[in-house]
Length: 156
Image 1 (tube, rainbow, N blue to C red):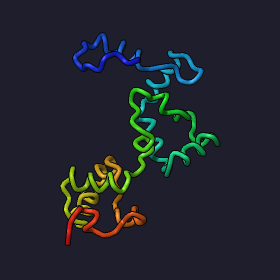
Image 2: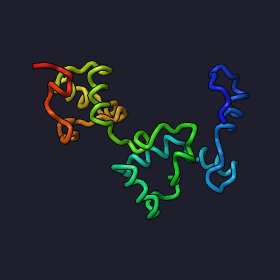
Image 3: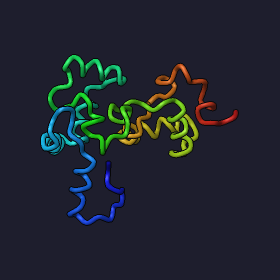
Image 4: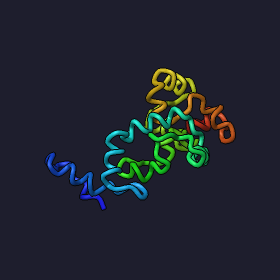
């Protein structure tokens, strides 16, 4: 049970709020869990995981089952990092769905053509990676791809 989400707490209360959100990991103690999280914070763990290049949650599960993750990546990061957790897709750096990418490209980024899209991802590779959109949507989404006009909600 997390404390209320107000951000106007003074510093003395921040540790108390965090302590309420963090639960012991698996059969470990709360002290062990806090020490592990301090030595191996979410972003550091996620950076390691992104280097593995898992293509799916199933791929992750196989790696975890075979012991390939190593000691600095917990088998259940969704439990270890519950307060920071967004989704498996975000944690593993998996690409957005075709529809999500389309909506983001057009309605959030304001891109209108395939050339605009390519210029955006090539000019902002880190941002494109953070947004989890592919460099070539026509190739990455080959099953869903119809044409440029369809992707950008244009009519020819």
